[in-house]
Amino acid sequence: MIDMQGVYKTYPNGVTALNGLDVKIDQGEFVYVVGPSGAGKSTFTKLIYREEKPTKGSVRVIDMDTSTMKERKVPKLRRQVGVVYQDFRLLPTLTVYENVAFALEVIEENPSNIRRRVMDVLDQVRLKNKARFIPDELSGGEQQRVSIARAIVNHPKILIADEPTGNLDPDTSWEIMHILEEINAGGTTVLMATHSQEIVNTIRRRVIAIEDGMVVRDESKGEYGYEY
Image (tube, rainbow, N blue to C red; front, side, top):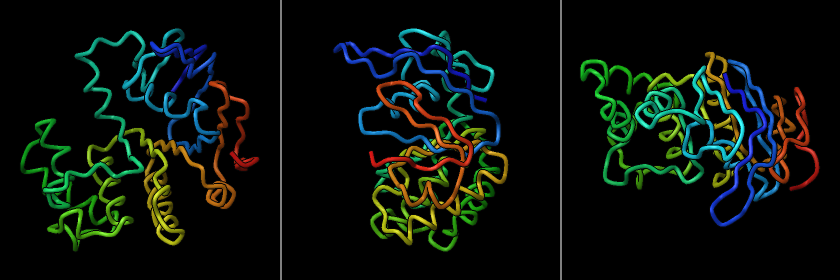
């Protein structure tokens, strides 16, 4: 599903974010990505949906070589990779329904399929009864659930969750985790960048630790490790 070999990334300002990173992730895995701030976690995830390209090395995602991919092929990749952000990134003037439907409208999905699919994913994230609300009328946890619904409405093969519980209280964080687990149980590969030691140590999954742009630890059902 994801295969990175000998990946380096140096930005124009001279900062090296990735320094010979090697990672393989199979279909259906749930993987935590941990490490200190500035370790290269964000660059690693951005390579997956081609927001960044490697300076050197090979990046293959769903049998596509993103390091040599032509720009016109990028939208095809991104339809198969959903992204959930820590700060939600919802459109403030649109309703919950419209925020999720927008992800289908931009790829010109058949209108007759949009309503059914949007209501299905809102039901999946327990927000079917708030389809007509706007983001400001929702709690932080509810806004994050809308973000998740938007990310999975295209049936992506991979879901990247970038600190999805970072701005949420503990109870709400567990609600989000249970939803991510359900999505993973349905066959979607989930990568979650996180600083939550409690979540990683409680819901044991594969842990990839990145430091100084390299994988320093890769454990099945691993622990968070030392404090970052």
